Every structure is written in structure tokens, then in C-alpha cells.
Image (cartoon, rainbow, N blue to C red):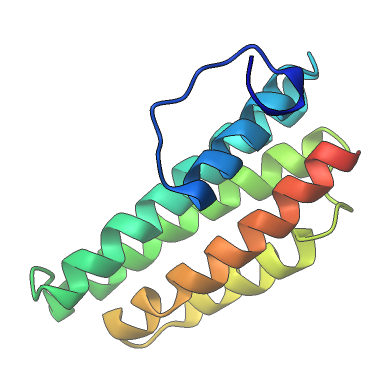
Length: 135
């Protein structure tokens, strides 16, 4: 048995990641399909940004591809926000911050500006996840 009596065994040793993973399990175990889908789309968006940022820092991204990256990252956020709106979850804490991040993605003038949004999205993700769990 894991924290909060969720029947899920993790392989994650890092405390922050493990706690986050158990929180995902609690949200998914509620049986609320829309919340589960919002969680999945949130994680897809976070993964995209978290993969983008280290690739940028490693010099693996081409600045001339800014429009491509902007469109790809914006699409992840648009899908998340649309799913929230379609399922009455768009008033949850964190939703307005997601909209602001989307606006920043769409208006970014450099790929560095896109990379700088990864941590902001991560923190907003925690806010939204907490709201999904409370809702």
C-alpha cells in the first residue's frame, strides 16, 4: 500500500517526483474521466516543455525553427485548455495561468523565451493538479 491507501507501487526514489506520482494516482483513481484526461494533457504539455528546455540548453535547437516550436508547444497548451473548458474545469486554480503561458508561447520572439517557460508551466501544473485533487 502506498501513501493515502492508493494501491499503486512506484519505482521513483526522488521524494518530489514520488509524491507527484502518487498525487496523479489519486486523481486517476477518482473515476472522473475529465479530470484524468486533463491530467494526461497537462503531463503531455509539461513533458514537451521539460524536453525542450534541456535540448535548448545543450544547443540542440535551431533558432530559425522558432515558429515550429511555438506552434508545437502552443498546441499542447491549447488542447489542455480546450479539454478543461469542454468539461467545466476551466475555472480551476491554475487555468488562468495556463492561458497566460499560452499567450507567452504565442508571442515568444526567441526559442530562449520558450525555454524559460518550462519552470513556470511546472509550477502552474502543481497548482492545477492540487485543484484537480480538491475538486
